[in-house]
Image 1 (cartoon, helix red, strand yellow):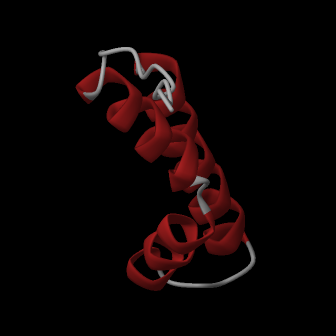
Image 2: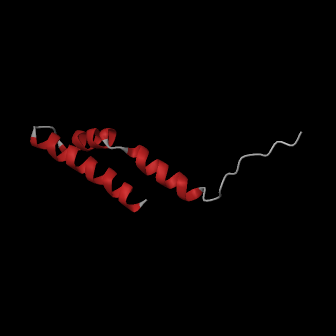
Length: 62
């Protein structure tokens, strides 16, 4: 979970730095970086940590 969060922050920072180097002010550059960062990895990690119970298939008895 910590590594995926660090990846999201690093990606947002990298995109913001490149956008700022190309002439975009810091505010919009950070917004662009946050929009492009892969937040789905963080979300999946957090949800996996919250639901640590195992799911077993239901047995059908007929």
